[in-house]
Image: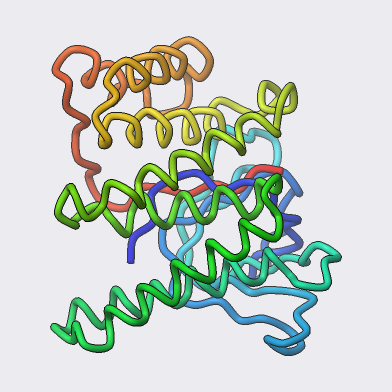
Length: 247
């Protein structure tokens, strides 16, 4: 399952790739695809998580520029929380990956319960940590992409819920949001604009697309924002888009 939005609030330690280990700052890592999530030392008592997939890391001296993608894993520490909301939201995302794989094989009998289980786990995680961007934005990002090919009316309540996650994440980041690089700001603002457009609120979509152009001119999403403002249609991504994590 391709995931194409912004994820915030993780404590990034390192990324290990085929060519060796790349040190990551605690501000930015960007990835294009999630394959699986491994919780350590156990799923019942997780302290660390490995998110496996294809990653493009921010350059150490420029948070708005990225190294070429490489396959490996993002390795991060989970917040000290006895119910582990961050672990729960990532596990739910992994279940949705499994659901997507089942649907792609035509196995709806297994895909549907996996999808419901994944959504429930991510929703439960937000209930545990409603003000944690590291929980809010992964859930919103995954649901925005997972619903993209659903019938509009079926997708609508999930898209509304994802947009609410993004709105809350933007609110709780407060002044710190302005300190992010253009890439990070652009990904979150684009996700909000696209989400509002998908549920039919063109006024809010316009506000966020215009804010993206003004606040994140170097984000890489400006061309899409300008096209929506001119045509009312968000152009389709050409290949894998990225999901960032910004603390």
